[in-house]
Image: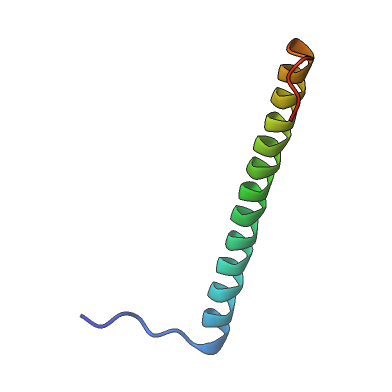
Length: 56
């Protein structure tokens, strides 16, 4: 069975929606990465405070 054909407006709307969904997903991934990075920085600072003799 052949897939339903879409007219230009339908195809445009579908592509636009997919782009918006992708943008939302990318934003969520960026937020998770930023949180991980900040957590690592905080963890490193905490380690340095607990062990002030160790230097890089």
